[in-house]
Image 1 (tube, rainbow, N blue to C red):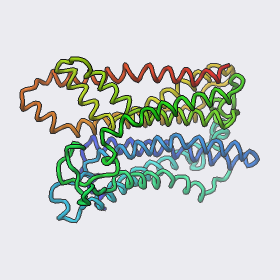
Image 2 (image 1 turned 30 degrees about the vertical axis):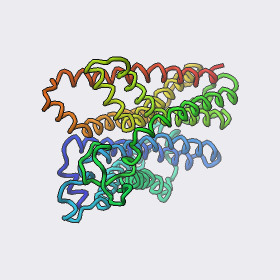
Image 3 (image 1 turned 180 degrees about the vertical axis):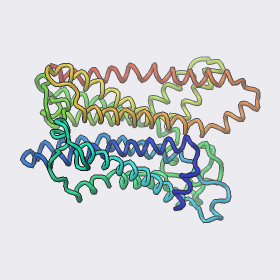
Length: 404
């Protein structure tokens, strides 16, 4: 009940982010139900239905990332002065954040179930040809299986939120954060992600990320065979469906490598900005980017991985002569892209909130707003200069073995 009251009185921007989580949960739930409907309508092709269900893991992961990013930026999950005396300690706030995330995901899952039944014609009306083929219209839908699949996203999102936001003790066991390292005020409890925000941990992941990306590309090149062919399963890239597991394993390794390398690449961009004898704008932009590399690096790495995968998939589809993108493929791709883009924007908002005190101190020292704006624009430009060619190159290398 407290979580519902906090949600009702939240800022409109906070409500918008929660609605985005609900929409992502609804889209993912619709894809899961589509896989279940296909399995019910085609019991003889269990392997195809299982592959459909496996592909749903990608939008599920994107939805979980968006839910966790939204929970971290929710003001209701941040400890405030006097809240512990009212019985709202760090553990209670974590439970409230997890409950709010679960409520948003359940709302989206219910809307997905209603839309799925309407499109199938179970609530009146007649299903069209594509709905019959893709959603299994006209065949009974197992209620237990539908409810179980719809519960996947709310349960996983609430659990992931509770794990990420759980309070952590510092070295003295006092359960308080230092404030300087995280950008928050003193006296706030540490969370699981805050304890990993040490500057020394960021560059160490960069060589591992590069090594995993290179290993994924090498594995994909080694096991790939023949040109891409059209397929009618989802339809997804037919070359991916008919490939050995090593192709998908190579893509997974490349994606993991980009995610791990994201913080290091962001920190490297900041060091390049501050290299040499920088002026005030370049020095400020480089130092801030280095401090925020851990916070924004992982979402940016995920965004680069998804962008490279989408580019490679488009190249594969262009090589397939007969089959365009299907409706479920388009829904899944749009859902994943929207989730990772929203997660990156949410991480940027979180980073802006974390440096509020620093910005206020600079303003008190007489720093003009134009200088702060130029520094922000320079940070964005530096990230684009470093990440765009890298993403394009990895996408070309990932698609090349599948086209020849």
